[in-house]
Length: 135
Length: 488
Image 1 (spheres, chains in turn green, yellow):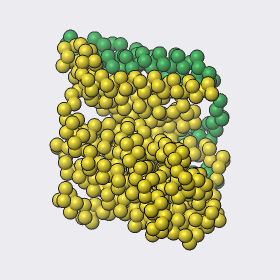
Image 2 (tube, rainbow over the protein chains, first blue to last red; image 1 turned 30 degrees about the horizontal axis):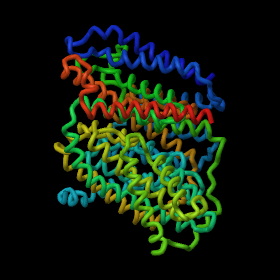
Image 3 (cartoon, rainbow over the protein chains, first blue to last red; image 1 turned 120 degrees about the horizontal axis):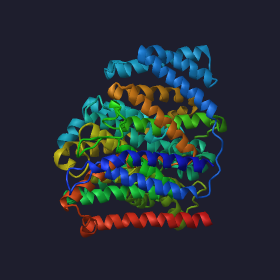
Image 4 (tube, chains in turn purple, blue; image 1 turned 180 degrees about the vertical axis):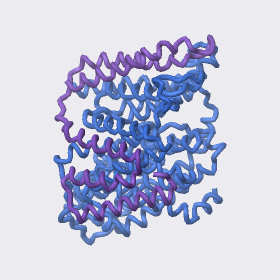
């Protein structure tokens, strides 16, 4: 089943590029040159053919992915990125470290303080002082 | 070349090289952190440095990570990097026999020998090869691009069709952005951030760095590292041992360098072939703590690097994902790797060669004196490493162009990388397809224009014909091989 879903994703990707590249086929520079749509058009047809053939292959069996764990984790990271975009990364690095330590069940206040201070300091030294990146 | 040597002795160059070796040893020793991931994370930092300084860090990291991947393989039977899979076979047996110290010393000496040998071959072959490559036209470069991608697809995994789909997806994703010939935006959906295409480094950090961490996090309950009760022993490498491993090591170095030069064939393939052949022909009992078995795999792992550099520097073709990142890094510096680089940036070529030599010398000194200390890395909690990698991935990507869009791209590829690893979708063809698309498309277009709209350049140019035939044969051969394998 998973393999079928993956192949359907490839088919959708192929269809997207096929439909978007078709109008570009007529935008070439002359009779001897290739239009900007030609290459993606051919590639998307190839991808469609390969994915359609693969649809008929026997699916492998996979272990179930712990989607919930991954989702919580991604939400935490996206929140960190969004909040940092309004202020500064340095404010939210200790917050993200705390959330992740809780999430990984390794929370201890002493370890947190040492790690958060050392790591934020390291990032500050590396990016702001050494590389002069404005974070 | 001597002037470059003198400039390398400057304090800042040595500093960046040593930093690269130290970071590489940490990354290589820790199972799960691969050389590719390390390089992907460090690349954004190098953009603020001079190309030679940046390359000092990357070359140091690359050599060191491949070497130190053998440390966890020897001590805890877990390869630190995929290239050291075969190191576990004899290395861990030696540890169980109480000879861990000797095994670690063999790993260091053999790895450095492999690296130095392949650098010597690089010096011998790179310049003549680049002169030959200068005669290549656009049709040959188109064929080289196709050949490189086909090789990666052919050996990219058990499922050839899946590898092919990933390669095609990589090619398609690379077409996003402004077209190089007409200057027309393609597949940008009106998003101004996509006019320059998907940022290659952001994609790499996501797919190969963050994706790996995501994968480890959702699998974290399945295995815990242990490094208790390691007996290092007092036995050390003596002259007798060195003598016994010398000839097989030279053979392994030759084969490793050749395999490294083949596009897409990396250290894991080299060490598996060398170990398998060694077992057939050697009198030593491979797999039961053979010092020869251990030495040949370690030599092959690092000999691959010089071989991969030959292909990368002379043809501009990535041998594996690490060289793909190195090429991306060179392009970001405004340098196009390939034969022309030998004309325009000879100093950088010499710098890379010297850096390879220096990196391996540092590895010998550092490895022989600090290995016991490095084994302490294994007691680091992986959760802290995950947190560090996540934050570094985000900030490193943002710092590339001060773009939160790039961070979003990186996160998307992180999720894709995680699922790809989970569902056996090889990322190599995707990355290589993405990197090779501009080479393949622009040279194909140029060839068409030069042959007045005809496709006859495909069969009238001998090198093009040979390379394209080799691509077809390797692809069909791998399909037949995988069908036979699945029937068994």
